Image (cartoon, rainbow, N blue to C red; front, top):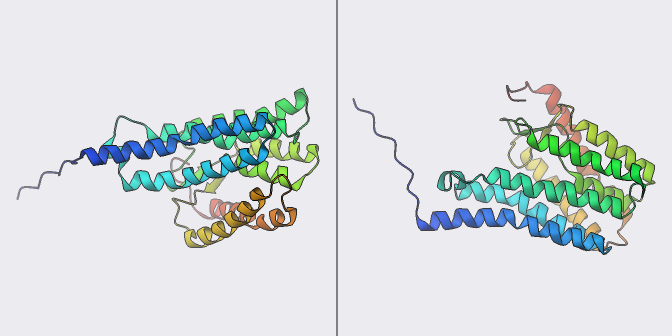
Length: 246
């Protein structure tokens, strides 16, 4: 009995246009990073944080669109994952760390520059690891959530030495192969994570909307989600077997 030939992928002009539109959507995060950096230079921290919020929304939705419109199959010669990493490095790492130094969250001297540079180097290393995202949908090492970290350091108003300690410790954790949940791809407790994530997003929206006088008590209340995320990630790391690429 003859086997049926595998059907070839048929792409139309609409498929290609849609795929390029998804890549343009991802790339739109880069101009947002530029606007954020210019805003930081002029002390417009609220604008910078809003740019990071919008960039995070784009990053949270472009993967879904990419899968919906089969961009890998339709445009096999274009590496959308690399584009995504470049834009993410700008918005999740460069912009928040420039803001941290400019806003005085770290010492305003050479030591402060060194501290701000640590996440830049650590995340550069993290982004280049082939196992940065495992096949079972975990991040390896502390993910580059520096936009979230800097938002909390800015709002909570801790002393610079406390901020410095957080940045140093988290930079080191980038190199520690603990697996952290990849919420949009990993189905473990996904509904619970989504519900809690929406509540957290609303609280963060309220906080950012009131910068430069953000409500500290709401920021503290919103810490429930980062605590949940880290606790769940650590529990899963030590409970589930590692894949070969972890």
